Image 1 (cartoon, helix red, strand yellow):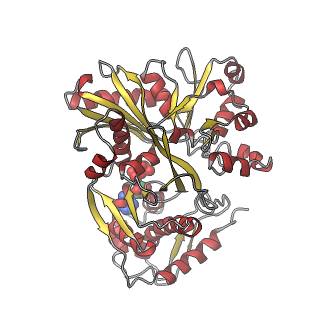
Image 2 (cartoon, protein in one colour):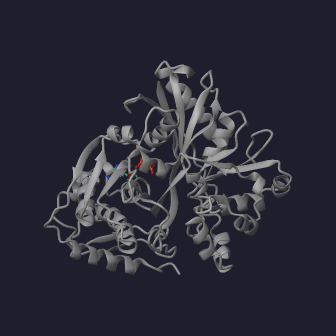
Image 3 (cartoon, helix red, strand yellow):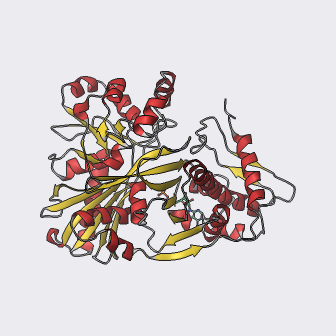
Length: 489
Ligand code: ADP
């Protein structure tokens, strides 16, 4: 028997096939278009997401000569926070999916803050008031798409994150569901009572009848016949939480960071432990009725800085070249970059910060720029790490890593030096999909936690260099961040 992970990301939907030994045997990937009709607006066609998910699943089945009966379960990992509102009888979305990156609800968020809701929202949902989360996106659709408020009040519309829309479509409209991890990113779900929060739904004027039932991440979600026979959907988990699970960070204090466009660090706290200022509380997963919590630090710009140096500035020919350049010099020569392109995320949450390059001298070369860029990616992770360490007393012993930029050996070594802990890179780069497969495999009885630990395969461990002058490096970074803050006021 096999398990399939369906990883519905922002830029593509991937389907990956795993055997009992956790070996990834085959994969298929389909792109998803991103629309940016106005500056700061980001949306996608939800029907395209579904169609591409089905295409990826069928291509995978073809490639691997699979039939439905070979598959024990499908697990879904998905881009989080992105919202779809659709008609209950036709499945047709009333508007494009509003993507997590979309900033169109910034003004609504300012109003929420000036209404004095921030503390209540943090206490209940674990989140900072920000356009990033789902609540204000649903509200925007209700307020701006003609006729929608009425239809919603009459119970004709459903709302959910991408996982909910996919499951609803995959099950032929039979199941309207999400899991605890996705619910915890909506800014409408009380992560301690484990209920949609009535007070917040009233405040945002979102009819409760639109929202999905919330289930465990590992659960018998429903059955789909898109592969020609019925296959169990055995789990749902938001992408960052899926990655934490895929890294087998099952114990309290185990942490992972994903270095993609942005960077996302999650630390397993087992029980709810109030997040320090600037960080979020979130649900890591729920299995057998037991909810595991995490603290999350989201950094907006990580690998995107390397992209910017390559595509906009022409300083790099490729992302990989950043490593080669960084290694040509022995230190950053006092140069720091703060990549606050769209403000700073965790732990600062300063929307008015802007990017800077500071410490330029006549001797500055593009090698210094490349090095400072990679270092900034590591410093941002350090900021989150320290915030957690100092405010929760958690001893984070090592950091598991994934994402495109985790391939950069210079970055990984520097990360280890700055944090003073081992940085552990897995052999499998697709930890998000792996996490979804693991969750579904647990439901199907293929694996338990012990068995999963045995599947974990390390590519490389980066150990901290004891001679590294950490204090000096961090002092420069802190001073640079200070200068970038509250710039665009
Ligand atoms: P996402 O899933 O967010 O699209 P990926 O995990 O695919 O991102 O990672 C791509 C990002 O990582 C890009 O922003 C790219 O600039 C960066 N990146 C890829 N390879 C490297 C590398 N060798 N060194 C530094 N950055 C890299």
